Length: 208
Length: 208
DNA sequence: CTGTTAGGGAACGCAAACGTTTTTTATTGG
DNA sequence: CCAATAAAAAACGTTTGCGTTCCCTAACAG
Image (cartoon, rainbow over all chains, first blue to last red; front, side, top):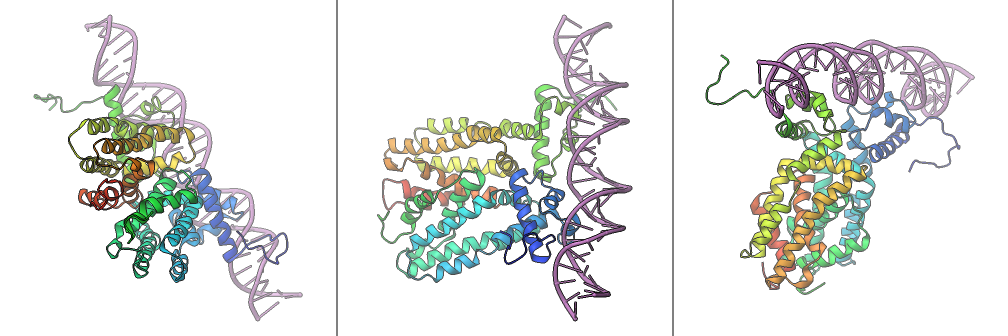
């Protein structure tokens, strides 16, 4: 994912954003390969082909580094949410599928990072707050927003706009992908939506 | 100064099962306090008031130790499941609440251990298999069994006996407790059951 | 082209765990 | 009561990663 534009074939020394990208990549690769327990700054430096100093210059702690790498990649569900809500044509069900697909992509790529962050967040209130604010809440709000939009379009019962229903889809996807590390196909995600989510929220009671 | 009359208040040296219990306790305490990343055998030994050697004599690796501690405590959901299915009186809904309560208890006590195990299981197929076999599958089967029992009692639609519906409750509980580290009260668990699970599986369409 | 900035890479001392070994002692079975 | 056993505790050398510092040079600005 590094920027290989019109540059010469061997760029010997990266700087600034390019270097940070490489480090983020290395963090992901390293976390995925050895896990958080065996995760070291040294290994990240080697993998990113940089020196430890360049990393310490930018991040104070291991957690900072991991968190930053995570947010840099998946930081704003905002874009996709805006994008989704802007699409005034598609029915709620299809938008749910789109959002689910996105969640699957992220969970697949960043499963290990998510687990690591969840572990650390337990005893790092600052990290917990960051996750809550930048990941969990936007995701939750995205689903609530989708439900509200569905109400406006007459597809969703007004009393179905609640946190509980908003959480069903992310919970089931995350349960399988992040906790049990089982892949979830788009078809399975669609099945969750059609068999578990839509029947609960739909204005047409028997719908499936 | 030495002789304590009524009971031997100071048990100076534990052996066998008693020692292993103490070590398991220490593993839980340590994991909860410092997390898996900072988890060390030395700290466990100190906390269990034993020597490292006594631990190394019993477990080869850190993962072995953690896994064993976890299974020793929460190894068999079998008992509670048998207990639940044996109760031929209670309606499905109430058994779901009971099971949910149990899951909450376990997740609350062992949240950190579950996260740690989930992290490690990603790259340790043996551990993953153990978790799948001893934790995940029994839990899943418990819910499927409960659904089937509901069908037999005429409370649950026959076509609702499927893995997808069986996973809704554990997924939502686990999503909140284990991943987001938010406590879930019994009332909230009941709400999930009444608003999200029962409406989907119930023979009486409008029930809630 | 030149000076400044910042990255690459190696080396450093330090601290923490590792896993092992040894010594001492409590417990238990005979 | 006496061996045999196994646990507690400390000491061990080793490894590993920490975070820092150093020198040298590539990259960029002027």
